Each structure stands twice: as C-alpha cells, then as structure tokens.
Length: 312
Ligand code: NDP
Image 1 (tube, helix red, strand yellow):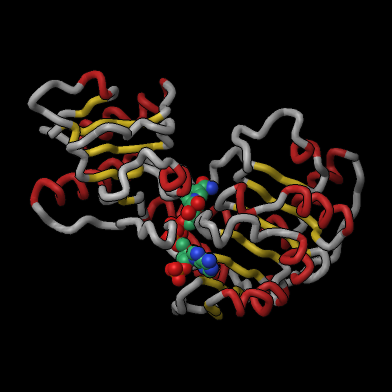
Image 2 (cartoon, helix red, strand yellow):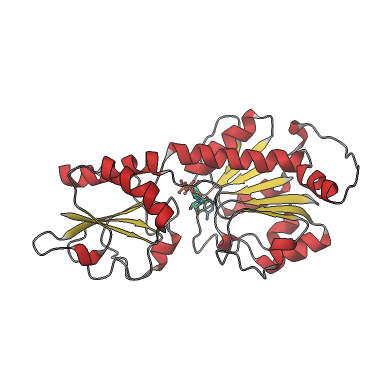
C-alpha cells in the first residue's frame, strides 16, 4: 500500500515537503520514485504536484490520485492519468486566504494608482493623480469557488462594489452574484477591475479575448491569478495599446517560466508575478492530503474530488 510522490520538486521543494509529508503520513511508505516500489507492496496512492506526463501510467493498483496543487488542468490533459481512479485536488483555507491577499494587493494597487506611481518614481516624475474612493471602483470576480469566493468577500469588506460570476448560482455575502454565460456581459460592464479565478477548461480557455475586453469599462484592468491559457496574449497587448485596457496584473502564463524574450516583461502597463499568487503551503497541505489517504484506508468518502466531466 505504498504512496508515490509524483512531482517535479527541486531540492528546496523537497526540503519543505518531505518532513511535512512524513509527519502527516506517519506509518505510510512514501516513495520518491516508482523504482522504489517492491513486489507485494504496490503503489495504491499517488500524491502529485505537476508530475511529468506519463508519471502515473501503468500503476494497476492505483486507487487515489491526490493533487497537492489546487488546479488540475494539466493532470486532466495527461491521457495517461487513469480515468477510473478518483482524483482529488488541494483545497486549503490557507491558500484561499493567500489568494485573497494577492487579489487585494492588486486591486488596491490599481485603485490607488501605485503601479503608475512606481513608474513615475523610476522616471523621477512628481505627478499626483486624482484619487477615487473604493466604492467608485467596480470589481468583477470571475469564478466563485474556493478562491474566488474568498477574494470576493475580502474585496467587498474593503469597500469595493463586487460582482461575482460562476456557472451555477451561488450566494456570497456582500457580493452581487450572477451565473451562466449569458450573464457575463452584464458582469463585465460593471467592472473597472476584473479578477480571474476560473479553472482552465474547454469553456474558459481564451475567455479573456478582444470581445471580452471590449465589454469592460474603458481603461479597465485585468488581474489574472488563475491560468495563462485564459488570456489571448495578442488580444491583451492590442487592448493595452488601444487604451481599452489600462493595466494588467498577471501571475500566470501560457508558457512558464515566462521566456526572457517575452514582451510582457518590459511592458509599461503589465505587472507580473512568477506564479506565486497562492502557493501551496506544505505545513497545512500535507495534513489535508493525509485526510484523503486515511479516507481510503478507512473506506470513507474522499474530500474535494474533481468532476472530470466539468474539468475542475
Ligand atoms: P473551484 O473549483 O473551487 O472554483 C471554480 C469556480 O469557477 C466555480 O465558482 C465555478 O462555478 C466557476 N466556473 C467554472 N467554469 C465556469 C464557467 N464556464 N463559467 C462560469 N463559471 C465557471 O476552484 P478554486 O477556486 O479552488 O481555484 C480556481 C483556479 O485558481 C484553479 O483552477 C487554478 O487554476 C487557479 N489557481 C491559481 C493559483 C496561483 O497561484 N496563481 C493557485 C491556486 C489555484 P460552479 O461552482 O458554479 O461550477
């Protein structure tokens, strides 16, 4: 009943994860490589973090795949991940709060023109800008799941009028919510800032395109904290060039790490982060993953299973 860790961890990652997993999974046999498996003790569980394609092929005794990351789009795109084995993803309140901090930082920075002031400082330009109240800055949060709900609530608590969007109707305190594709134009029309927290699926890929940008208020900002595949990069650059978009804060990219030659790096209206909006924290996440390991051992239902038909 061995547990395979299928990851692309570097030495620093292992330093953080290995003691946390050993502590959370005492009594379990943890394998850092499938070659460590021995006859009579098959691999029944895979704990995965961005595993290389094919890492879970040919594991006939596998009964649970537990992702240590929240997003599972890459796993679902890997045809060698067995379809009939339950796949659970990481849902950690600590990550939701980290994401809300990043969303709040981005929205506050946009609202109070901190990115413009940073540019002005670099140019030694003394240029006060007019100041808006928080209640004058409309924020749309796309995706009202674990992350989106937490961000929307945090932004609303900070005085922003927040409109949220999901596929199924949901209520979130102090947030006006809409559901379904038909409601998207209405949601975007109220936004000076749109925060993306959707999963990457066939339906959401490329959602941030010229048509979507045109629906936002002129000079609006995009904050993409979800996946690079949501954004049509050429359309984003065009919308920034035309002034339809005023700024973009991007944490995630089609190709990661972002190549050094990419135009986003030096664009004056783009602020970028290296996919750090909400990092999985081994101190809490290892214990959360261990709950599903124990559920399998005890014959209890798993938490946070991915709905493969929906893609998240
Ligand atoms: P959840 O699965 O909890 O929430 C997804 C939300 O998106 C739900 O509200 C869902 O609606 C909505 N949704 C999905 N498809 C559609 C659609 N076609 N139209 C409208 N709404 C849709 O995910 P999380 O909140 O946990 O995570 C969101 C994403 O954030 C992850 O998939 C990952 O890509 C990204 N992420 C980024 C990180 C970073 O550091 N940058 C860290 C962690 C996650 P409904 O519930 O009604 O189906």
